Length: 155
Image 1 (cartoon, one colour):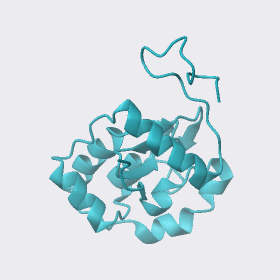
Image 2 (cartoon, one colour):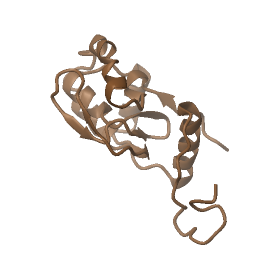
Image 3 (cartoon, one colour):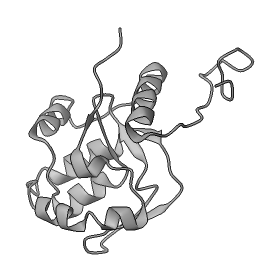
Image 4 (cartoon, rainbow, N blue to C red):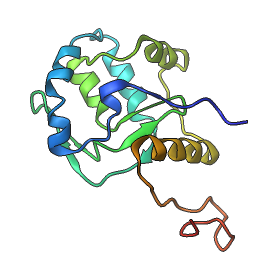
């Protein structure tokens, strides 16, 4: 049985690069300071622990105050329930950018540990987000699937 669709964390889920994400500066500023300083480190650990769904080779720069740079920052991570940008942890940690209350409760219920996704769930999330973002991403074969039909490159 397929799991429910993954949910967005709003602006912190947009896989926009460079200039496109810089255009979100005002929106990000309007969300700053919403997360209590005591919760920021735990949320950042959770966000950094998500499984990479889309990895982009780029170096994102903080669009608010140039406080950080993140390798692959516009890439997408997920815990199987929510998805977010790779640099979301930095925006939460440095600026307390607002996150949905349901997500914060979800992370708290998982003791602030995102944990890895199964290969099957990772593929489900990947397929769902390919449709959401109108992209097609080549994926590697499942472990042990070398030489079987349906592996990488057989799309």
